[in-house]
Image (cartoon, rainbow, N blue to C red):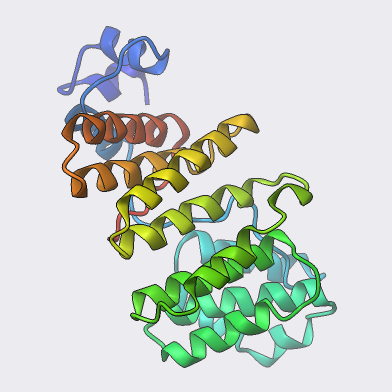
Length: 254
């Protein structure tokens, strides 16, 4: 799509060029219209890099396709096939398997006990990998969604302890966001805002843009709930900018 085609009926071509070059910050309505024309979906979070569940590249590619397209019913069926289970070779793949199965179960309205069981199996391994941190904070978020808040502080502490000991990878960008989301759902907006700002600093300090659109979108939601209109508008605009520039899907199921 050319600039002229994208801008037609929405804004001038010169304005679009200014947006792309970072010299003009448009309002949220304009950016939403541009995103709609670009067919950018605003639905779900995807991992920056997916984890392997076997040594078979075909199975790993199938997993990635189902995850990225959010085809959770098919993902659940795929993971529960005996042939898939037979290909798991080591602890890392086992951990990934239970994490993905928990996500598939959660998104297909399975029993909470089943979702939690698989997340607990994903965190059962020794050590503290990025996937284990994701599993811990995901378990905390699942508990919040279902009104079980007693174990939340401990799970968050485990997910974020010794934060600087792991080599950087982009999937770690999700951790701060999910912790902020937990506090947002608990109605603790100051703490949610703090985690969002720390997350944005963490992402940008590693020269990454992954999750920035989501961070600013959540910041806009926090500002709205806190009735801070100026911060809400700025955060919403920045979210839309990152969504358009980097085609990042924004999780907006609140």
